[in-house]
Length: 293
Ligand code: GUN
Image (cartoon, rainbow, N blue to C red):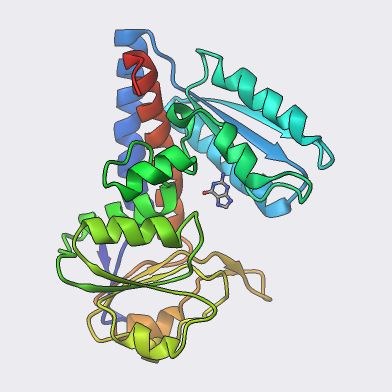
């Protein structure tokens, strides 16, 4: 955590928090390998040519290597039949040398995302998107939890912020971020509002929030003057600006002049998402050892 004197808000340093997680995981991985003969491995499947997906997949592979996790990448053509993808997933489900499986989203239009996600063995589902893992999260007994909201919860822990009784507003209702985020905040006793494109008076809802999670995918959509004095602001957005830089879903400068804590873009939520993927992969490797769930 670094205090930035230009702003009222302290910056939540996601890069540093992620590095700490990755350092710890590196030690855990070598202990698993040397002590238990388990060599944690993640299989990443990319279907098609989405340029952003290619970058994400490359970054995930690099992060694995740095933590000593074996990574395997399967790149399939954009016109790959769904049955072929399902048969690859089946092979990986049944391979004892593979502990985590991830299909990078979005998949091409002719492939049904739900069918694919449900085909991944829940014990290897390091994204936490399988209905089993979603259901466990709803029930308050998560096994493998979605990486982005999981990373956000970790960042909130690192600043020692007590969510009990706080008003949390999430903007965005995706299966990947908004919905699981709502459940995680609820389990920490926050009062949660999930806003979306049909929400009325969005600015007023955000103005009432002690905690704001912005996951819309639109550059600087949340204005600085929507942020309550002293709020905690978690920005999930990674938007490429016309000048070639990156911007979050929140007007950072405006928000930082009012918030008490804020995540930057880049260097906030993004690095923690990848760290949680690695953590889930190591967890999945341990699950395989126990042979349970
Ligand atoms: N596409 C955008 N975010 C994600 C993610 O967290 N996991 C996968 N598999 N695909 C994504």
